[in-house]
Length: 289
Length: 337
Picture 1 (tube, each protein chain N blue to C red):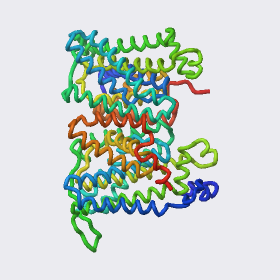
Picture 2: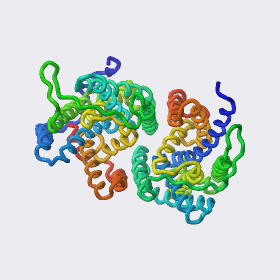
Picture 3: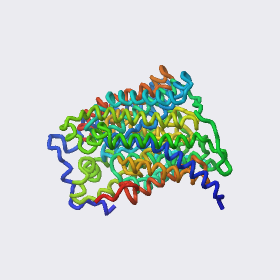
């Protein structure tokens, strides 16, 4: 029999991991929903964001400045990547965007290896306190991650719902040609959306940084998981991918009670395959009429 | 296979092209084929040591590239999971070479192909229900599942270290058995790859292959005409996986090891790169793409050391944008005649 407190600790872990994953995946789903771009480099933007965070942290010594600096740098980089590599592909088969972003992923990953070396790096967490959660000393910082992720996603939601430019973005999602006819600068909307996605990836990278060693290969893991989440949640559906992130992370955390964390990943893969078989439009979207 | 029989006899519809010479491959085509095979056969005799091995590697990776071209170029399904088939081919061959004494080449081929076929059947059953990027993501996820299993199941697969074994001799039971020489192995690989090419070419030009190309061009219409699109896709993925497994067996025999690195998605990514660089839908293009990629890797790793993937990635991305046809894409018509 599995002790109940162990299950509860794993549920808290799953929720925290789920919020980080939701932050990564909502950027990915935003980019997909608006531009039909499957961003293979998304996890690598996450990884590079974390590295930029370490550099900024070393120079300023302040975690929050490092977070902000990393988000701005990566948003700028995202805008440049979109304008140079992805804008020419607009209107071509979405599959070519996978190929192009796969190329970008190779470049970013190996750039990080070249720039930062193979030894994992760490950012110090801004708060170091612990509290007693059953049998473990649980760090407050991990709860802060979940709250920060929720705040950023909430901010994105409010911006999309009420902000003038958020309405531009939604209009572009619904009908690109009509939006252009109404005077919305569609190419710029695309660039800005990619920048927002990259910035969100960077934010999650910096927030996640203190809990692991940052290395150049960690991006792919998140790309894959974000793909799983985005498909399970329904492609291009923001609310669905948040629910799916939490669902998938809970599954993995609970599976980690029985098997090693490396094998627990398989559980989320199986969830993806079952979703595709039973409900290919995604688990968390209303049934299409 | 009876379920695959098209509703109407479609052999006649094959000759869509009415130009003179479109009925079959021209003499020029076969001459070129013979010249290329002869050059490849002679290459180990004239090349210095390192490049001999390099030529053999190109052939093996070329076979992997060709196998995925059946899906990417001809059926329009971009598989990001070919490393699973390739890797399982390697481990299947390894199982036979380790379990049976003395090691048998033909048994290794058989077990490698069976392993790849079983995996391909499994992947095909699930992934072909999906299209476009969903297919790509599913195949990627499947290859990762097999990677995790192989990486963590240390007792059977050797885990991170993989398996090492001895090279089997080239033998026909009861007749002779001679160990592979450097050149002998090259010629063996060349023979297998050339035969596979002819087989794949035959497949793409058969009525079955024509249906695959029709799926690529317009899937709803193919379905509307009455073809059971899913079954064609399943068979396409299985055939493709079988040839990828064959490449894996050859690689295992050449290098005398099987390692989890070859099941990792990077191999699948490289396979897609071969196709894009060489020219999808030409069969020969992906082989040229593999040669181009390996050559670039070799040259850049002498200049940039382990960061060679930076310039390779830049060139690849530029080719996706500016040269979507690939290096040999302009020959597409001629190569498929």
